[in-house]
Structure formats: structure tokens, C-alpha cells
Image (cartoon, rainbow, N blue to C red):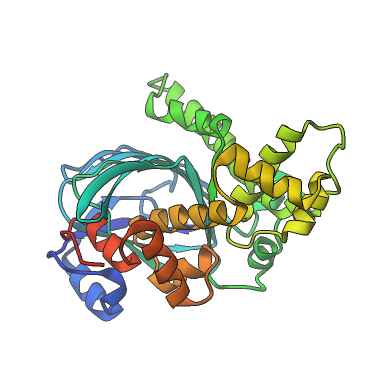
Length: 353
């Protein structure tokens, strides 16, 4: 795993990462300031608490060469770009609460996104840039692990994980990958203690190591579940009807980008397609397709706010192969285009849709 030292620069208003040539970004970072030190510490596993006046609430800990955790209650105090180099890495970003501004009909609405999990897989060396929103708190925990030995270290059978992940681990696919999953309440509880650390002193290292293992297991279980949802035979036919409808929502929360055909989902749940559709609409107030579209848009908001990927890449991740289809769906759901929403989230005013 490579997770390089992080550097940051202050940037002028109006800069958009996806519209800025890499050569210009590299030139801008010639006078960058260092934020964290991971690869240049003498033992490569020092504990860091490198809070900066530009970043309130940043805690980063390197446990060993294969394990790194960030605990962030970050409030960037200026408009900054953060840069680092990574390779052979998988990151599980647990988003507890992210406040975002949204403009609908000329009115500003502030709401919370999450809880969610963003899984990023980067097999080969990449330079990454992110542009956090100034004066808006980002509350998340990120665990980084070595990709190539991930399942071996965990003692897990690769066959139980999604095909795309196995391809990345085996070196058959070198493209960066990203997926967004929405967390259940019980999974969210694992994040809470990170913002209320109960120990200090020499106990901190042991607590951090244990928390890393816990969150890594949660992330791996979510990936494993996503890879086996539709491979599972029909569920227990004695399961109550309401439980089957809730089970359908759990599956769709994992597979909203590529939802299973309704006949197949109904067969897996052991109910008719008609009862599945009517029960889902009755219990949750939306049709199955409306629910999937809502999940796609919420996932897109998280990725747009994270500001690492182009809009076209984000559309593909959440299930839209056609860029214009993604823009239309996003505009119907949010009242403005993905680009306009991203600009508003970055504090660049209230762009017109």
C-alpha cells in the first residue's frame, strides 16, 4: 500500500478540479504546504495528530504498513485543494454526517447526507486531488488497507466477494473503482465512538488498532453481501410478508445502480411480483424504481461533494451509462444540474440550473 504524504494549497474561487489540467495543478503545488506525513516518517507507522489552522478536527493514524485510519471532524477554513499519491490501496470511507446545501426553486436547503460507505479501490499509482467545501464540517472515518493482500490478511475466500473486486486484487483490472453503499443503523453505531474516543495515552494505539479491525470487517461484510445478494436462493418462505419487503429494500440499497429485474427479486423473496410492487409502495411511499433513482441521486451527491471524480465518472458509478441521462435525472431530483450542484456545494454561489 502506498499512501503518500498529503499536501495542500489555497486556491482562488472558481477553480473546478475536473476542468483544470493536471499540468496546471502540478505547477500550483510547487509551493504546497504539508498536511500529513505517512511515507516519510522514520518507522512508517507513527501516530499523527497534525491538526492545522486550516483543518479543524483532523486525526490520522498509521498503525503499520498495511493499515491506516483517518478520523475527521474537519472544517476547512479556506478553499483548499489536497493532493497525495496512492497505489495498491482500498479505502472504506464511513460518512456519518455531511451537511450539504441544495438550491431548489431559488431557495437554499441544508440537509444531512449519510450514513453511507464510499469504497475506493486504486490498484496502480494515482495522484489524487480533492477540494473540500470551506467552512462546512465533514464527519467521516476512513480506513485504508493494502489491496493486493486484503482478503489473504483477512482469511477470506475471494469467491464470496464481487467479481470486480477480485479482478482488481488479481491485477486483471487496473482502473480505479468506487462504489457507494447506504448504511443501516447498526453499522452507523460503529462510527459514533470514533468521534468520542474513550481512551488516551498508551491505550490509544490499542483502541485505534481495534477500531480499524472493526470498521474493516464492516466494510468487507458490506462488499461480501453486495456480491452475494442475488446469488442467494429463495429466502425462508415462512418469513413474514413485511420482512420480505424490508429485505427487498436492503437488496436495492446495495444494488440501486444495477437493480435486479423485478421477477428475479420477487422470486428470491418468495412472493409475487404484484405483491412486491404494491407492498413496497405501501410501506415506503415510492415505487421500486423511484427508490432506486433516489438512492442514485443521493450517492451522486456524496461523490460530487467529495470532488475527486468527473461528473461523467460519477454518473457511471451510480448507474447511468449515458451522461445526459444522468444529468436529466439529477436535475429532476435536485432542481439543477450535477455541475451546478457541485458548484453550490463548493460555495461558488447559486448557479442557474
